[in-house]
Length: 477
Image 1 (cartoon, helix red, strand yellow):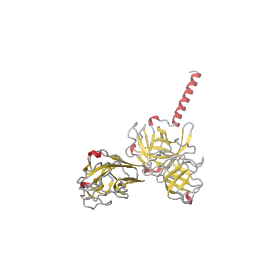
Image 2 (image 1 turned 120 degrees about the vertical axis):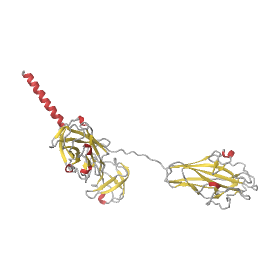
Image 3 (image 1 turned 90 degrees about the vertical axis):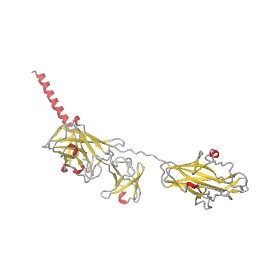
Image 4 (image 1 turned 180 degrees about the vertical axis):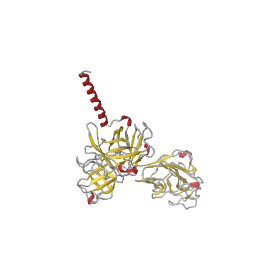
């Protein structure tokens, strides 16, 4: 073998060794298919209060200056969030009740001096369950599977104090092995309490990067169910990991990423490269979607077709002429006849309640100016009034009459009274009285019929008569 050939083999040998070593450093095991599915990827919130806050305020201003804090706007805060505000151990919790703008928020409750110091912080933690799934490439009896999730190594941050960190996940206070579920790894698999909450320093990548990781370890007495079959480890039960706050270089709307590792240890604690792989977790702000629904009420009056209304048939020919603002009885049948026509009233509202009232400024009066009237009805027994309904089934032989009755059509409104089987009726009042209402937000349109009735005796003066009926619909919001 000549010198050139020997040199070529030597270079090839060195290249092979380098490639194998590089592969180990980069933790490339594509067949492991690592994935960490979080129950929420929302970043935690960590802001600093600005100057200008006053004890007793329910509005809080935050510092929006560049570099002042990980969170520098009210974005990623939402109504109902629990927000801890204060200094050091003097933190108190409040509920976010509104977002004023990107620099101000409203809270439920009042602050005191220690809460609003310019050095005070405002923190809202976001905690998530991690379901770490992967596909094992080997089976080791009495081995261990480890999930390593990025923890902070930044000066001033503590990975286990329950406060969100900029550069990693925080182990919430009280987290134990019972918060790790290893059952998917096979019979007898369990979390090792002593390894929960400890950190490991791992160097990976090319060029090398050294990071700290929270270690979650599961023992596998029987190995795993099967090589090449997907399995998982769930991290987070009663206690969960706290998601990072934005990093110092974070841009809102752009995800921050944190590394995680999966690795397999044999019975002696040696790491198996075939089952070692790195993945990434991304976290980002949640999106606030806003919309406004205006207070609204719609009230309509409409004519009706012929048929039975309020339990009695209406005058077919005249009913066809009834519109939203006209109820033309035309020539009344006099003597022993009751003349009946109807309109329909409809209410649509998103209010918390509504009420419909009616009144008539004056009695049905002849338009010739003489002041002759068709009086308000006294019903069958003479007992009905503007506030008390009585049945009206026959005309009064000695008195002409004008009044009304009601029936519910749809939406289940609360009726002041209804016609029933004897056309229960009232005379119109000269001041507003409720005819139907609902003491809650209606889920469907509210519809009722009002039935007008006129009876004229043979002694009623000939002429044209007119009445004005006013309806009002009012909603509470």
